[in-house]
Length: 308
Image 1 (cartoon, one colour):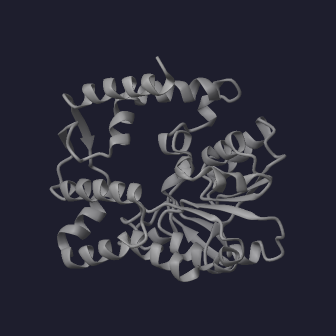
Image 2 (cartoon, rainbow, N blue to C red):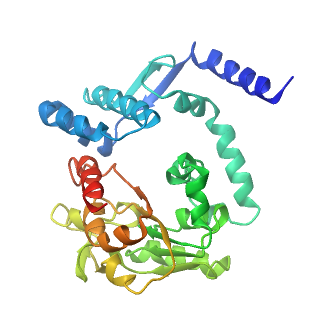
């Protein structure tokens, strides 16, 4: 049997399993609720935003977007769990396969990382360690440009993404930015413990469109400058910087910018317009912080298009 026949057989087996199965979907998340509320309360604005957002997307992106819209509209019913037939369009075909093989995927990732790292020091997550924050979808000719280049890791948390960059790609330097003390200290300890400082450079800054001091709310991955007026606990003074200023004299190619900074992605992009125009890096921008910045995912696409 040829390789392509084996692959087809495996796919047929997977499809036969989930076409007759039920998928359990959890939706009680502030991220999903915020967008679902936007869809429910402002349907005309949402439809206009989606129409604009579709412009320029390729076929695979459109399929993912359509599946995402379907999910958000169901989430709008404010039900915590759904039992969804696996044959429904609730998920893309790829998501269905991963749903039924996720335990094997996790086991494989953990086995790989345990050869070098204490798993307690690394947060293993599907979007980081399987999807590589979306990098797996890029053409090889784009990924080849990462070799011996610079990557910017905005919102480094405890180093999960930076360690993935370190292990999977041949970046010359990984510049990681994490403003909160707890996350910074954990990540810095890992850098020293596993001797990663040959390529990872960690800085205790938040990314913004201004160079100033601000107060941040929360800890670990929930920290956000934009939550300042909503909470009155766990305050921490942090320093914000503009990437354009930090890399003003950079001559090495900046090939990738990843931003997952709790709703502050717009401001960080405004502070990085010069390097985006100069280097035209791949942009991996988190778009699920609508509990903080409603409708941000639509504005981000327009903002990037205007810069380029």
